[in-house]
Structure formats: structure tokens, C-alpha cells
Amino acid sequence: QVQLVESGGGLVQPGGSLRLSCEASRGIFSFKVIAWYRQAPGKQRELVASMTAGGSTSYADSVKGRFAISRNLRNTMFLQMNSLIPEDTAVYYCNALVNDAVRYWGQGTQVTVSS
Image (cartoon, rainbow, N blue to C red; front, side):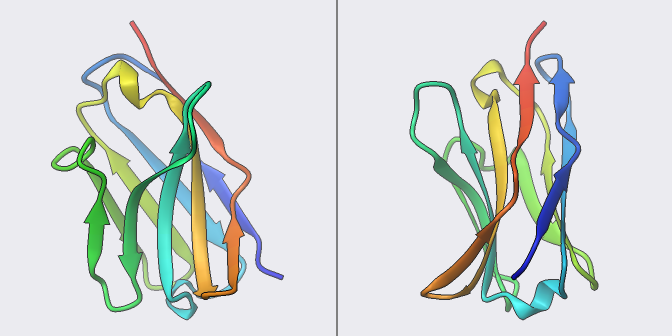
């Protein structure tokens, strides 16, 4: 069983920045894909950003140029969020894919963008 523990959410004004972290209970390079999802009230969970084990990244159109997914050499993934807008308000979840049948989720962290 893999645990993913998130941190870094909070309240930020429009135009501000936040950095989310997700610490895994095993090495980050052991996962086929790592990703961040978000779910706003009344909406479905959506994929925000992903990174393959080889380092290829992909972003939702709504966050391109503002968000960046990254990882360190040990067991942590990050989501750097810049130029935040109110529409970015959601619970953010980290996700780690071991194979097509096994994936793990973090517990979620709230991000609120408001003046």
C-alpha cells in the first residue's frame, strides 16, 4: 500500500501563487505516471497536470502557462501554481499510477482563490 500526503493548500488572492507538495511513501520514480487532479464544488474531478516516469508533462488547457508539475529525486511531487484565478478554487488531489490497474490518491488539499 502506498500513502500520498499532500500539503501547501490555502487561501490566496487572485494573481497570487501557491506550491502544493505530495510526499509518497516510496520513491517517486517507481510510478509510471504522477498527476494532480482537482474537484470544484458541484463539478467532476478533472486532470490538471501529469508527468510520466520519463519526464514528459501534460497540462489542462485552463492551466497551461500558469501551473507546473515537477518532482524531486526522492519521493515528492509538486504543483507550482502561478497567476491564480477564482476558477482555480478546488480541492486538489495528487495521484500516482503504478500500472493500468493500480493507482493511489492523496487525501486532498483545499485551494481557495479569493480577494
